[in-house]
Amino acid sequence: MAWGAAEILHAAPFSHKLHLELIPQCTTCHTAAESSTKPSDNLLPAPTVCAKCHKPGEVTIPAPPTTNLAHLSHAQHLKMRNVAPIIAAAIDKKDYLQPVGNIRAQLDTKIACEACHRGLHESDAVNRTNMPQMADCLVCHNQIDNPFSCEKCHDPKANLKPADHVGEFHSTHNKPTVDKSGCAVCHGRSFHCLGCH
Image (cartoon, rainbow, N blue to C red; front, side, top):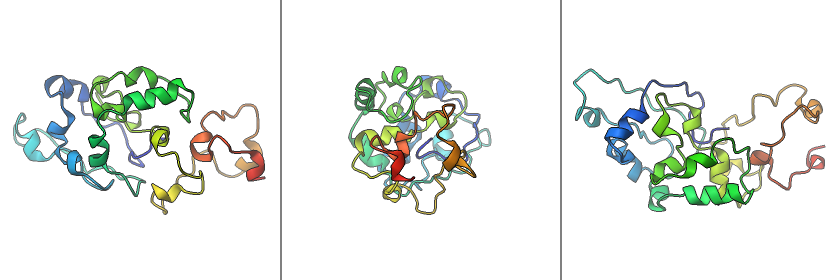
């Protein structure tokens, strides 16, 4: 589950791969990130930033994506520098709360933003895989009682329930065919079936 990403984030045709070859600092274009203290802040580059390299009218900047977060400070996270080694250590200790996939390989980065916004060096279109995962946040923000403290970070009105948690889910999710490896992200490691049943 992408955390902090747009609720609906379609692949946008923008090449971070090309831009990071030319401009290696994310905050050169995403200037608002260093002072951003709310998830609703628009962190997309301003037209004046793009105008330094592009002709007028050559670039269309979309509206910023919506988010289901209520609390997030990019400014605070940037002050901590690169948290990639912290996330990597959690993965290595098996403390990361969702399937790892290729995340571990992408954490060998010197760019602080890529600790959470992974894969941008290879990205020709922004999508959910480039956004932080909830398990990233839970590496440090682990003093919560999932799923009863979601509103500490998320908008209380946000629909955080995964798409497969509908209808008969309560009676069918215990089948061997259901992948339970990501359940800990929302339910914690100490979750027991009898907590709900």
